[in-house]
Length: 454
Image (cartoon, rainbow, N blue to C red; front, top):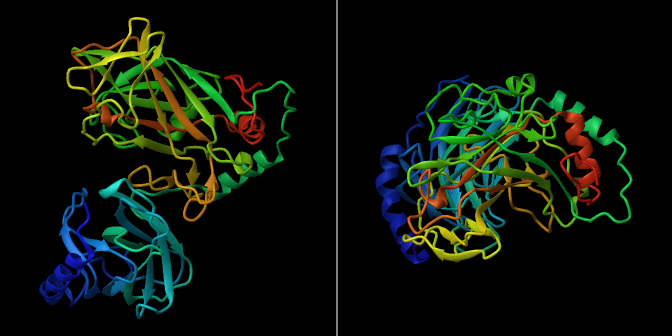
């Protein structure tokens, strides 16, 4: 729970006096001309309205907390490097999101605007995400930079852990090859949509139907090149997937456990266990659709796009009625709960099922991000993708069916409790096959099968 605003202001006054004295001289960062300068939030020279607290982020240290409209942080001697493109990132957390943003100004709080970083809901005040913005024209060399909070609503809306300023993408951001993406997009735009039969179901959707492929304690998105560094995963799709998987390796291996064969993508989830024994899914249907009121602006994923949905670190109870539940499909449905209350017990005629939904708005610039989520968003404005994530992409959804009805003993995931369910998608569709399905099925709001036909 957030502290009341009055208490926040009183704490800020006291901490400002103590911290500013020790941190006002310079910023710990890279030397002049370095590619990236990392600026911790607690390394401010002056501030208004912030409270500093220990952060649960992987980088540790303190974060600037309880920030509301009009609050600001001043950082001296921030090296913005030489003239040319500049990437600015912020590590932020917010339980409310909304219309808030952090504006970075040079010289003064109302000086020239360097960048505006919009703040979405990240999942909580200590649930961290990296947001980025590009700058083409900026002052060079050491500068005074003000981070000014802007929000149309009242009350606290963001915590900040750090900022980074670099001449290229910040660590963990994988830029899309704009030439290749431009060619893929041009090919898609030129495609002629297939006529939709009169009796078609008008739902924007196509799918890939997959069976279980293999298991490994690998994760080529989170821990690339580190075999055995992950909890156990159950893989679907491209049968070559391991810790060393790349876009090129997926495209060069034609064996897949999914239909159609032109989907060489890889999909994976944490392994399910019942009484200590792995329970591999009977199958998984990967739906590609749209949750937008108007799906006509949807474009395919760029080759090599990757993303994670869910939170492997979430370890909270999931009693009946909790959001994002495992559920029972089939006659009889759910007939009870496990002894710990976290798992459904299905009728003998029903089976355990889970549906995992991925974001459907993309920044149009990056194949991946440091947390594998910040380049995409579930948030829309007026039913459209906008702001930092203006590009509509298909909404991927895993529907996973398990050959178990569960029991009072309960179940577990290799990542922990039921709340830790998550999934990874690494795109390696044939561009033509994917593009035609998006054009025919999603853009035209017509339900298609795995073959991409109505």
